[in-house]
Image (cartoon, rainbow, N blue to C red; front, side, top):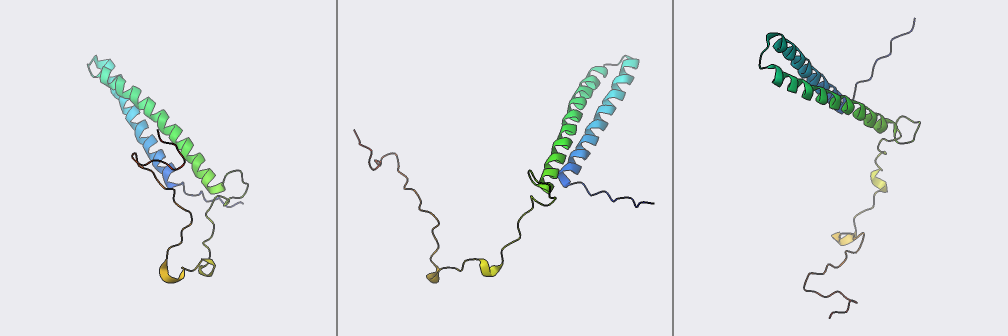
Length: 131
């Protein structure tokens, strides 16, 4: 007899999308019931209920697409792009403290690049002839 596999917990964005989809579906079903009862009674509530039902159908489809997209994004985050290994997209381990560069003596900050000189509207650029 095989043991049942435990299902992994869904990522937070997928669970929140699923909750929104269930709420939107419930809103749509309430609109269907109200529209049906209002049509039997010949009430004026049928028009707003039909509008709510139409919005609910649109919202439910939107939420279902959101579930599909968020599941794909979460799966790609777990597996990494174009990789067969499960943790290929995860962060690299932090480098040890000994491998990090030490601060320069005197406390002068390191300049990784030179900043370009910005010219204001009244300042001429070097090498550009002015008329």
